[in-house]
Image (cartoon, rainbow, N blue to C red; front, side, top):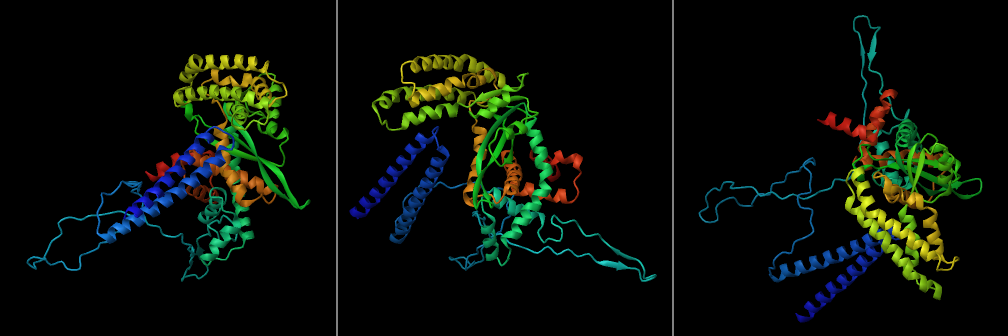
Length: 510
């Protein structure tokens, strides 16, 4: 008995040590480079740890039940009360084997009913939608024949409904399941579909959705404040027998941190290279604040506006990252060892600014501006003086000097947030929208062509904008495709933008 207790204690202590290690990794990854990758690893580690604890608890409960022991139940991490009323209920009544009274043998009546809910799952089911169109003829003249016209199909002569097309799109671009894997899943259900057929469906669906993507892009780029960023996309290059690097350019708006009225949205635009002509063409009509990283083409775009209609706001996260790398890396030389405390202090000074941002998030733009002027501006001014002083005391060829010169070289853009309460300190809002695209690229390995990259940008824009507005992407794309196929008026296309569609769907449901 004592050995069993000791073994159980050692198992729990080992799990506690593992959790402490994972929490330490999370704290180090909170603001650092590759934090997204480390956060995913942390979540995977926590999942494994929780699975191990659940297995140990199940074994202990089974042993106690077998031994006839009864210990007070520990509270479990269960989603109590989280089952929505909208879910269908399958009621099952379990009656006693004998309803006669065990004392006198008389008939018994129902005193009360105890109900316990469990979450069940019904696998996805394919069904065939059969459309009947009877023909009617006149018995009198026998010359007139009447028949209802055939409904429009999303794919001429095709067998896919709007719901199936939406499922394929969401599986590929939101759930990151490539088409060849979807074909295998369908085959298990007895449906034989070639990957090429699914690819044809995706391309034709994008033809329907392209006008809406164009409108979404125009709407987002007409905003007064934007986040902009880009990410590489591997694209198959058959002529050279290998892949080339295309780009997905993302333009996002998110006014929620300062109670802005514009709904959040993001649009992606594909290009076959990272040349500056691409963002220059995208932002041709844009006027306002553009929050970006240090990519040189944005400087060129802003400098070409003689009227100053584009104001660049640079990213403190990119600035901090250069100091953080020096703060966490092991010094290889005496010089780097001497510079490490300076990098650490720079990270701490920037962290103090982020602490103020966390405190004022959600206030109005004017309130944020006032708080920043009173609390953040003195810290920023002192930080600049401190950086200039340290730059004069270290080697100009060191990595620390590069980090300081980067900060000072982008200083005006880094300080825009002090004067404008709408501006964030970083570009994290747009960088978060790249996480799903990275997973799609990882699972698909590459886009098949430049046209495939364009299709990617169309569907991903609508899916991510729907998610930003709290909309189920499947329900959204299914209804949009249905409306487009049914002949939705082109002059009312803005009704199908995610935030307008949400209002429309809610009113129709009511």
